[in-house]
Amino acid sequence: MKSTVFTGMATALVTPMTADGIDYEAMGRFIDFQIESGINALVVMGTTGENATIEYEDQEKVIRFTVERVAGRVPVIAGTGTNNTDHVLSNTCRACQAGADAVLVVTPYYNKATQNGLIKFFTTIADASSVPVILYNVPGRTGVNLLPGTVAVLAEHPNIVAVKEATGNVAQMIEIQTLCGDKIDIYSGEDALTVPMMAMGAAGTISVLSNVIPKECVEMTDACLRGDFKTAAGMQCRFMGLINALFSEVNPIPAKAAVSAMGFGQEHIRLPLTPMEDDHRAVLFEKMRQLGVRV
Image (tube, rainbow, N blue to C red; front, side, top):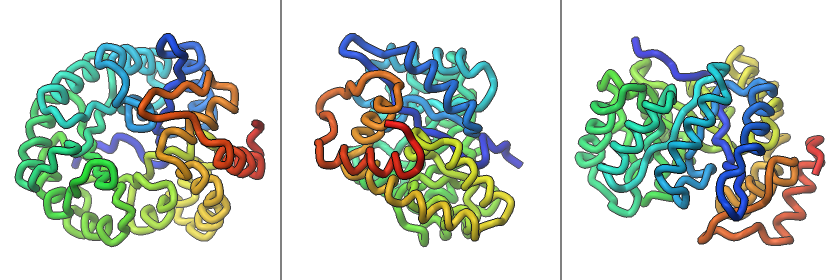
């Protein structure tokens, strides 16, 4: 039986920045806020963390800083995926050396590998990693779908322990569950589908929403884990306005605006992403205020 990296709610962390680089002071406070709010795990240097525009050496520094700040309080999962296999191997090695508890590896974007290519790619990474590997399937960004049958093959690898399923297709998640059983954990990669996917057996979610309301998000997944899906469904519905606002522009633009408004660093986001548009920002802040978040 493989070990589970986490159950419940993990935050895909925003990376606070200034024009000069990473804002480690704000990031440290933000990490503490997340853990004090009860979050079950932290994902650093994922899509929400703007890893695509952060140099590999700085990514390693952010991972190491996060591990040291967390100090074992929750698991730290490092995003190490790119569309260059050698880079992924190097990133993964550095994340392991920095003390990450697991790595999150996205399907190679733009290359549009075949399913056989994806099997070979993830197997190569898992063979080289000294920590558990979580597959990340987000075809809306990468242009390739990691199919359930492919996940089932990869689930046989002793070091591939979970998949972050972000297709938005609950039927695909159910097929993965059917084919894999307890050979692999499934995490929702869609905040709007946390409760439906956990009702079908997902172990939790890797969330953008929990950057903003971590305590409430944990309460929702805790309700799922104890089988109280009526309570969890009510919370999922109550959060939908904020979820929609957080995805009114491409992630992480709204999340960066929200976290900055909460006092965790500047709203500095790197090109080609640009600051949130005023009309979307007004809606986002209103939805935050409705849930008791001060902005």
